[in-house]
Image (cartoon, rainbow, N blue to C red; front, top):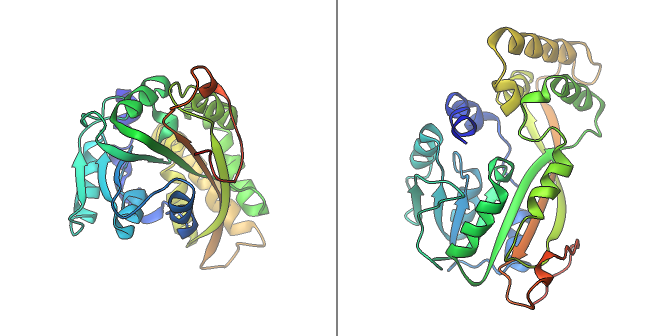
Length: 274
């Protein structure tokens, strides 16, 4: 746990400059499907520099930013200082320090894969009020564009440092460990992130498993990315590049039904059961 927290300390500036946010459709999903309102108290766990927290604050929710990394947390406090409904909390998803039944909603944006899933879900069940819900989001790789696929392939070669090497299966396995919660529902959106070629390289530099490389190996990876951008016909000579993402959204409700049925998985884009 300590290594997964500390590895983000040197990446704060890259996160602020180059990490994509989430499309407005995500907030509409949380409103329409999950009951998010302007009166909701939300725990944003693994809140980092506040990317998802800020979307929720703009909507009017009251947000606790749960973040264990000091540098990330300080950046969020600075960037979100004008939002009076934001509270920064030095804590983890497994031990939030929040009171029992104190929040209506829990979110995790681009962070759940770092949690101990079983312990985290137990903690979220403790802090959620009856009927509370959890929304988990990822900006996932979209490899439908050739040059993007080639850049991601360069990173694939050094992905041994990723928290899940088999990312999709690892994600599903973690989400299936949600004892105390009902069926899991999903929706997918698409978005593009506009970056300069330099921004693409810095975005790659900030990816967790690239950041974990020793300096010499990291330099090789970044040089390979530069070379791909300089030579590929779709990127050569361009000042702005559009990186596509698939935005994967998952949500589930604190379980109130028949014991044992919470292990069912219901993949859908419709409304969750009442």
